[in-house]
Image (cartoon, rainbow, N blue to C red; front, side):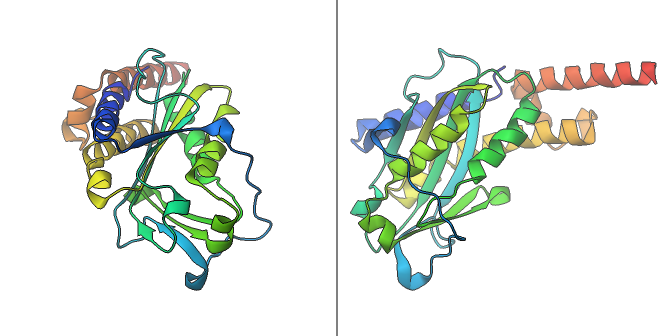
Length: 249
């Protein structure tokens, strides 16, 4: 299925644009050792911050997309971390805008259940010296990295490696690419249209499944369902299931 195929094309165009301006670095996830987990809750106080990412006064964005089309990804490289902007060690004492984007390839028969599992993996990040707070409703990530972690060489590569390794443990996931943007507020905000579209696709899918709501004329997601063929496939599948349950009941 291809809920996000058009969105991924837009994301690749974004990456190409940044690459043309010399803003892209590609990091191999297997160039990094596993970073230790924290044995205590990660609470990093202001005086201990080495770098802050996506604080409420800065631009921040976060979303995840997936596809079954193995030919659809060119700029988003499997097992690679694409970095737009400085890495952490280059940003001592700074507060940076931040975007984290995950692109998965695999086989997702039930995309709703897939989403529920994968979103929990995305939020399950426990790395020593990295305080991570997600606000899914606003698609924001606010993170702090401690001075001690930076002194030990903590990098966005360590975060990317952890995410890739976690997702690759899922049977349905064949490949993972991670994108981080730390360059400018403008670069993060350029992702808003893509991020908004992802949110509306996920919102439409969730409403159909959780509410079993098929009254398209009164639905706030009417436009997006009309544009995304695979949402209509999900709708038909749910309706067929509802009919079978009604007949058998």
